[in-house]
Length: 314
Length: 314
Picture 1 (tube, each protein chain N blue to C red):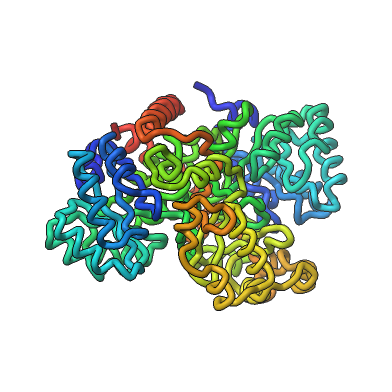
Picture 2 (cartoon, each protein chain N blue to C red; picture 1 turned 180 degrees about the horizontal axis):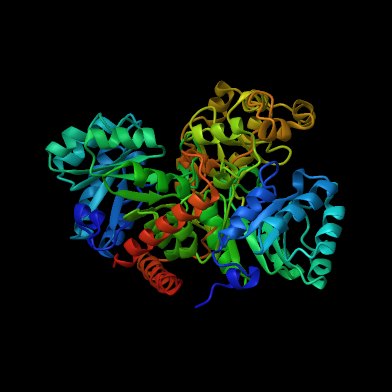
């Protein structure tokens, strides 16, 4: 029995590194693709010029397939779309926006399109728009998140049963056992964020990586339910937002507290007090900074032994 | 390879029905035990006299093992503990309290003890207190919930790796695929709430069961983060609390809005406006009122075919 995700994306191992702002540059993407997974360049934190530079560097660093993730709410997204078409990027992941906007144009350019969803309504919209697969991303995920707060365990079960196209699970996955659990639900691949965000090849600041590795249970929570739900890691900004939301701060006040450039400050510049630290709940399970090669070895070993154990259960 | 949960609890199938307030009477518990799972009587909504009555009726309805769930924060819990010892109940699940308080006394009476936890700290405490197993219950679960908001996917992976004693997964489980996913994580059993709460044999009101079956994604959310986090289903009370929390209501005001007897009103009397509707996120996946027998058939069929599919993946 083939794995449709591997066939569609032309990869060996159905592990995808999330296209994370300030983490997913050419270095991380090419390392993941070189291990046989799909590395994604995260366009969300890049100007068009920087994106082109990362694509060119990634192409020099790997001969394997890699892709670009484009958050559609980003004001640069129309230019990012032009770039991936010009550059003949084989796979594009779109997120945070309407899947109908660009899917047909990308498909006509011969690009495989995968859209990130957090509920069944958008999953069906994406399938109707003609995408090749969806990423079903649960409440555990870092950064922007669905309003329904549906967890990966519930969401993936639901989306696999609702759609005909293949499903990639995301949110809360950092071990081979969790990867196997997603396959048990019928997902055909996993998109992993936090574990790659804290890897050697991530372009995040060392302070940020250390904070992710130090994180314990309960150290990430979801905020900004009045704006756009976002999962943050503990720190100065987390505390400020928690206090403001606890006293019922309005949308306007929250927007003022956020200001601009917070995620760059936190993730790329390593300012744990003033920066916005976007990371997944699963960071509590990450206890070492690993290379991408070590991550692939770990995930495959855990997957294999968990599967062996599961096969032996009646 | 044996399943330690089946051995410890002396059951055939490692499926446990949660001891849910106003749902888990003798009828539900005995039906689950008759199918080879472990039925739990939920003492949380029972006076000592009512608990004794349910135990006696359950014993008449099944010759298989059944248990009692005792939430330790309940003022009746010392009497409930006396009763399960007098009645020689073979298995007791304790929750919402310190596992050290009664575990040794119950063990000395020959009772198997399982404690419900939502974080690693309490899981380790429970193991040290000498419990036979833990239930690791994630953010998806209905009713009272952990402050860390750790989902079942992340929690179960963490707890299985942290403990030596066996782990039962709970929260977000209503399909055989989800049961298999929990086994993939190394859990040796599943505790299922919402699906049994909406079953024919549940003592909940038909209005409540219908509301659970009608629930769609996003229809349950976690509230009362300032008091004790609790997952509720949409309805009049949900709206009232959502409004109050959005404007930053204090603990005192929230306590006043809650008042007393809300969960009885909602779950047992079927008042969807004034009642507190405690149910899990997975209710979005439940679309029919089934009998306990039908639930076991469905779960086993789904589990078997998901396992077959998973075994065929490389």
